[in-house]
Length: 251
Image (tube, rainbow, N blue to C red; front, side, top):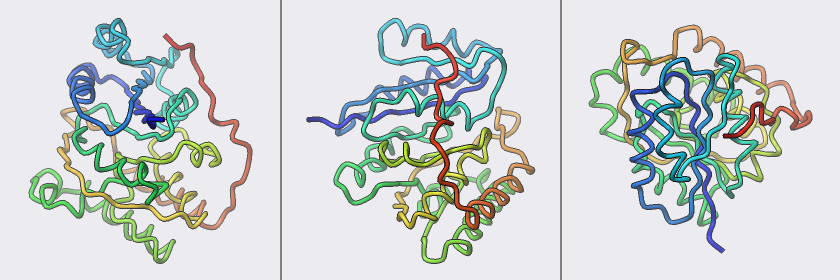
């Protein structure tokens, strides 16, 4: 039986990028079947309108948070709850990450080498030469990666805050996820590593955008990420998985 990959796309006010991204995702040849779930997190622009042609053709499923932006973590939990695939990969809606990298990212999952795979912008020379990647965002990301490796010795994570994260669905459903915003990503990292599950690194392309172009990460998110890494390094969390809830009606 062919494996199924669920691609979860959290989106908030991404009317300029969502349609080109979906076209690129549908054009990529994958070694397995795919389903694409877009979670619209209270967008106030034309994001949902841009999705209509894809919805009519049955190429995409749409879940909506109708009553305002609830955060990336909440959007991801909504998408994860609806996923029917054997594996899940997170795809940001802003086109910073190239869908052509997905086959390489899921290959270690498909062949059983890994349960969790992270893309890595630091082991790909194409990322290092981009002038906008050599800025405070780069230093912030590198420092989070260093902190992760200090807190979890031997984990060999090379890019902790990377957007491209892929994981076995059955494993993900055993991990209680609680964070609602961008700190969802270090929460997942910490809880995976605390279980002593290795994270496999795969080099990827990266095309960063500026704040003027819509980048949403800010300096305070770095402090939130460090706090979450510290918390879940030393605090065990084996609570219920009830946080995975599909919060709005599917369209």
